[in-house]
Amino acid sequence: MSDSQIADMKVWGKINVSKDLQKLVLPSNDVTITACANELFTLIAPSKRAFIRGGAVVVMKMRDDGWLVLDILNPSAGRSFFEKFAALFVWRQSMGGAFVLKPTTCPQQMADALLQSQEALTLLPRVEGLINCPVLREVNGRLEVAGRGYDEVTRMLITGGENPSAVDLKEAVAALLALLAEFDFQTEGDKARAVASLISPALKAGIFLKGRVPADVAEADQSQSGKTYRQKVIAALYNERVSMVTSRQGGVGSIDESLNQALVTGRPFIQFDNFRGRFDSAHLEAFLTAERAFSCRVPYRGEVTVPPEHYFIFLTSNGVDTTRDLANRSNIIRIRKKPPGFAFTKFPEGDLLTHVRHWQAYYLGCVLAVIRAWHAKGKPITIETRHDFREWVQMVDWICQNIFGTVPVMDGHQQAQERVSNPALVWLRNLVLAINEVGDLNRPLTATDINTLCDSADITIPGLQSGADEDKAKRAIGMLMKKLFRDRDTVETDGFSVTREEKYLPREKPSAGGDFKSKTYTVTKP
Image (cartoon, rainbow, N blue to C red; front, side, top):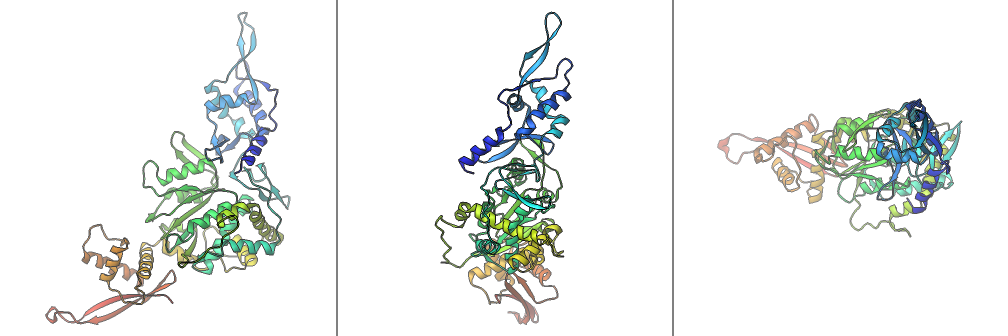
């Protein structure tokens, strides 16, 4: 957000605040808390400087990084906040017994009572979320853009952004597809889901989409493939930056606590970056399906309730390993690393992310051109049913196929969901990528060979306890392969084929018995 935008937001926040403050009598004599709260919040509400969010009074504040966020107005801060809207008085009994008005400050206990009043809940505008760019929404059947400020239609607090450009549909589609052109998606289905991820925030912010947007789960075959970068580009398209949640294990500073802190601030894009190993957060799973209210416990604030709908969750990993429930709440997008020496496009402004930030109003205009075209067609949807978030998938599936010309967005997605939620398939994918990395494609490998490779590539074998010997490791590998292959001889994963072959070989010592059955596994890339 630029300095000028922040300044504009401050000016907007001061509109309707009187210079000559009205007198407000705090509860005393025959003035009740109810009457005082009614008068106080009637004065505050038009200024759009305080809101109701999750049952609490919140205000905007600026973080050290220059971003406006929401913060709960506590009683201590409420005392001085009320003074910006009214000259505070209280009835005091004089020496002669008569009641006279005296100037006063608001006691903290009284500020708490006023903030907790029903009048605060009913008179202050409700805010559902924040976003740092104008929002396209429908008003009486017509599309209109809401600019900076509080939008009563969507109940969104729009904290910045320039008016979006008017862009022809054909040009808009080409420009948005160009943003994804240099990412090497594993399949056309992955590319379609990446397109869906570009437009989903606009559909949700404009409340065309009433339900939830699934988590954007970016998976890559190697580090530095662009998985995190693509998600940052999406946030930049909406004039936002991601709030980062990094991998930490339990206790103070756990990922659940970091998620809660990000949710309380209200900024919409939250990224769980570069997670390794098993990702299992019942808290995040609950958040992705919560309706209307979600409880967050944060240090020094206790339990805070937030509306969950207007957040967009990103998760990146080089090998997603998670629960089936989280997989069902995800939009999985797989990319591969570009070959060595690949030259990415350089723009006059710098790299792609810098370019999008510079031309953000134009690219937002491209997204809105797509939504306008879809709206003009009558907001059609498909009958796609291969995702738990049915409203989202049917909406983006029609847009992606009919406006962007992609394949169905769910092509290959169920297989991806099955793999990321199956530890054996996650292990096989990691193994196959390691085999490709060391140049052992097309070579039959035994369980001993595989165990050696897992050890050198630091690949955890599911079900094998730490410190187990080689024989136990080979047996664990054999059990995994048995589950994976069952009654088939070939398994596909991430564009590779793994073929199992069985043959009988003579033992080194004939006295040890007859021939034994040997199993080998060969990885090929069709």
